[in-house]
Length: 158
Image 1: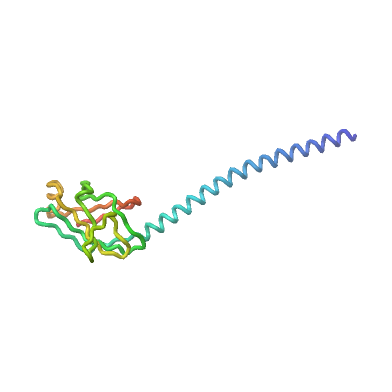
Image 2: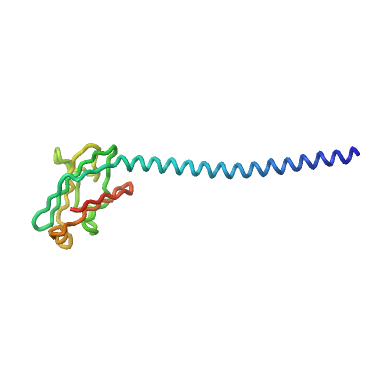
């Protein structure tokens, strides 16, 4: 009789060990998944906060009669500095050497390609190729598209 009681106790101990081990494995898996999802939610929140704080307003635009020069006045009324990575006119990439951003208040060229918070700047596009010049001078207008270093796109129909 004593022998049978010992084997029942051993059986319960083994069963408890299996259950606790399985619980540990499952809880570790769910804890990892939960941490990953929490990190993703925090990252999306931070990106959304930055995107909501990047606000540009088109103030004016001017083109010469040949369409080879375009000036676009933009005001950054957001909370963050915005940096342009690429600029397009109606889908045509404008080489970085052909555009610059100039502070409107002191005519200083901003070499960073950025628009500081609270600043009015002029995006100057010079020596545009004839393909772009014909788009600029057409009566149907053209589209100015700027791609930011943070992945945001800014588009205006001019």
